Image (cartoon, rainbow, N blue to C red):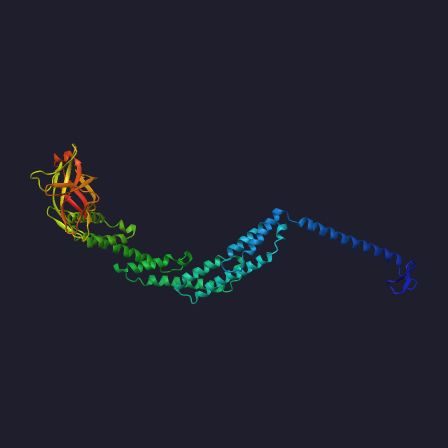
Length: 447
């Protein structure tokens, strides 16, 4: 027999007693309840142990899962010290983490670092925007650029980042203020137009540009907009009338008409398309432009044209145009006694242009390089032609090769022989040669 303590009165009694002899507390029922509790505790412990075993078994990663987890852990570690440039790395690490299963996410041991990196980065982005808002300072019309920049920066933030921008209210007030300033500035520009004259173009244009920059809501409060429209209409009519008078003043076109033509054209170009249609004498301006272009081209060609005996000089050459022959034979300077010549093919002849050239440089100059492009206008058509170069001295005439040169201060006769159809010798159709000689474009009217 063993002694136990009564749960009710605390006195020692036999463990076989059905009730406490001192207080009457029923002992057998209590023993049964205690046994049930013990069984429940044991069962709970067993369930916890079994759950732990199952958790470990179900949480274990296979090789592929472990590889994915390791890749995310590396991506988070690669973020390093967070700064304003860390956004892309954080975004990538978050993307990779979110793509993991819940099971794999539990094994990302540095996930806390990712959360901290995101929080730090959000702070830096918010601080960047706050700094831009601080730069606005006192709002004037010149503040538009920095306000737009700050607003763009704020709009680009995430919702979490926006909550960290403590001076956002100032940005809103700055936007409201510059809106009011822009409205007042536009009204003032319109009011400043005053009496419209031909000198009002720029001020009207400034007022229009100021108005067009406003939003539709801002435009709706411009109470003097009709004044701007009326000024534009009045100015356009004045400008149309003035343009017509400028065109009429051009008169007969000469080489001295350029300034008048340019002034009328500039005035016409400044008009709107609708106003240009009201310039009733525009055809006169078009004809004047065409005539002046023609006269200018003729004058340019005249300056380039070489007549027999004409000379010109460059930094290297002194050139005199002697004459031109249309002939199948290229003859030397002297044809007395024995002499050499070059003959064209049976169906060809030469335009033989003869120059006297002198090397005024201090070094030897290659003769072949003195002639450039060659174009022949024959009977209304233009042709780029091949040519041969020949030099003559006394009874000799020699073809020029690439190694032939002329010493400093030496002179020689140069033949530019252009191959043409033999028919050229038997008709009188017009022929003009345009060629580059000594680096200058020249024109020779053959006939």
